[in-house]
Length: 433
Image (cartoon, rainbow, N blue to C red):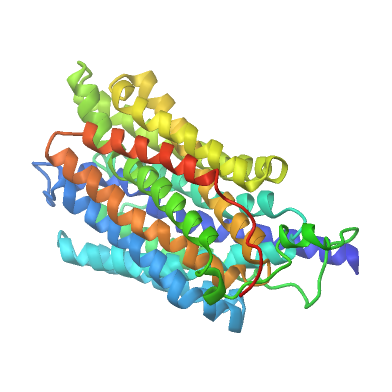
């Protein structure tokens, strides 16, 4: 029986990763911004408009996760909620594909419906995996959400190939050869893929039996139990603790910086490279590589490595170190992003640290407020990501339109250094009141 349970819990991780691979498509948004803002293109959106769509998706993601997904999956289990999320996400992209060049159509399809689908699907793998792996929370939350980061790599590369390159799937799609598929065709293709892949992943999601514990592992007792997720806070109890608000503020600042870079790296990178004498066509390739390879790949590895490190260093120390390193890199990014090597280095380091958020904060939520209720509590910590999703991309887009990129990256770096200081104050909640 114990052997079967161990096998089952790793199958849940496989399902979690498959679902997250699809949800990570939101981080491929920067691959579309060049086409959407092209002066001679069909859309002719402003930089700010592209970031409004991205921000709406992020905010909807966080709100739906907090207000609906957390409680719903606690009642009916992770599978049904994940399936619903996959269907809504897929329909959102299909809807955007059929709306042509309409800003409002893409905002509703990718932003509102796409964000809602991600919000429903995202918490389900995390909640299930933490219950199956109370002995490896940092590592397993990293693995559970690694697909989100690696998914961005896959979808960015596919988007770049479909939209900008001659990928030949079937001659029935107009514009498929030479110039590639249109943006709307890619939206429709992705919508269909999301539904199919998430349904497969959701079939592997389930909660462990009541009272389950891994073979050879026993829950800690006494003081150690409180710091290992054994003291379970309700959401109402959690939000009255200073630890919750400290985590919220730190996560908000970190999300602001990371999401800003995701949203504008293609725009800033191209402008900075061109201003340093790089040809525009080559600059597009370099920025696509920076985001599609270096940022996305390291984002996925960051989730696993920071999660694993936090099991050894402790969640507090890991959060402080991550924020400190990210703060320094955000400031440096503005000065070296106009060079090819500098853009690659910045994208890799920022992506690696940003990925760490999604392993560290759910694990910290479980540590401080309980393993049992992480599925309902973490969405409220994750609301900080939604706030960051408003501030970061729109700040980046508006500063880009104003040709004042320094006023985006440098303040974000300083705020991250302040977040590291706040992290030093983190400590275990004393009691449930």
